[in-house]
Length: 433
Ligand SMILES: Cc1ncc(COP(=O)(O)O)c(C=O)c1O
Image (tube, rainbow, N blue to C red; front, top):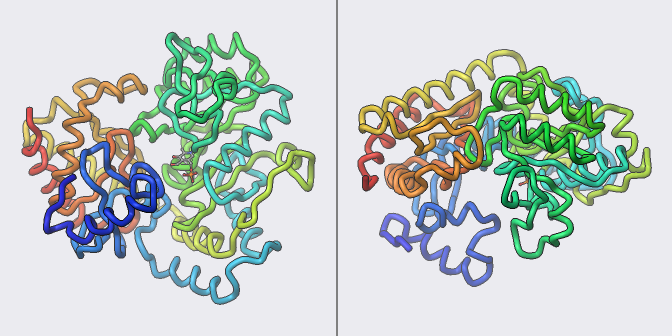
């Protein structure tokens, strides 16, 4: 759409890509359509910065949508992956790293005694659901409107009209009967949650404990505890999808931070340190239902891949001790404060909501606090789009959607935050009131 000299190589690549990749990309958000521009093709990254194929530098607040908590091309991670590759890229047989990583994760995440690795968060969610269904002998799932757990058929369900109705397919190709076994309720709505769990026999209640796929929307006080209680009272299993929050909002994820332990945990992103890896985990008793220990089938040619495991282990090693999380919290706060000042100085102080927790942030174009998907959808997405285009033009790569979170990392520097804040202040001026 917007071809400028600045993006000439990206534009040429996009034209080629459109011939061979649907929409020119391998995952929709990369196409930047929701901010009304064409995608940028990336060449390389270092720390908190990336460079596109036209050699434009950007402060990168996307960081591959979460895996790169240590920033781009961290030397320890690059070395770990290179060393592992030199030993062979895949065996289809167990390796020591998988055991090391499983031990490391179970030390950190309260709800995980045992885990199974997969290659993507989608597979991990899908498999956790299968296990929950096998363990409970039930079929139905409860999910929250605006939450994303991967492109599993039964989870691409939208709320019908009215509260806590049977899900309807969120995409062509999802069978109506599959979506109908998912009940979608509004996030942070205690009454809807209670009503749904009283009415249906759920196999699982599935939640991102810190939802970050409708922008970041924290749980209201007591909501995670209520989820736990509703699961217990109704005989459903509680699944926390910590693909984004795991190892990020704290060492042991949102469950550690909130002190609410789920029955099953889905992990992804950080666990693979930028290579394809994810996992689902639970108590030993539950996980031993998985084949070959038990009868619930699930498998994967590249599950526990040695390169991904090496990157995951190297990443977790960088998250040891108190300091990394103190630094990540400080970086996130500095960014949040800087963006708040930028919005004030540009006269947008009353028109935006800045929400953050360690390692995650969203700036909503909303005059009201945003508590659920309805609130997120009510944001001024046009304003976000022009602000985001303005950021890109000024060398700041922010998520190209009002519904995606920013991902501060350990690698971002005070200078990069300053550059971001200056660009943000100027980009407010691009918005047509
Ligand atoms: C919370 C959450 N769960 C699951 C997934 C799916 O993970 P993947 O893209 O690795 O399939 C995502 C992806 O962004 C996610 O944010």
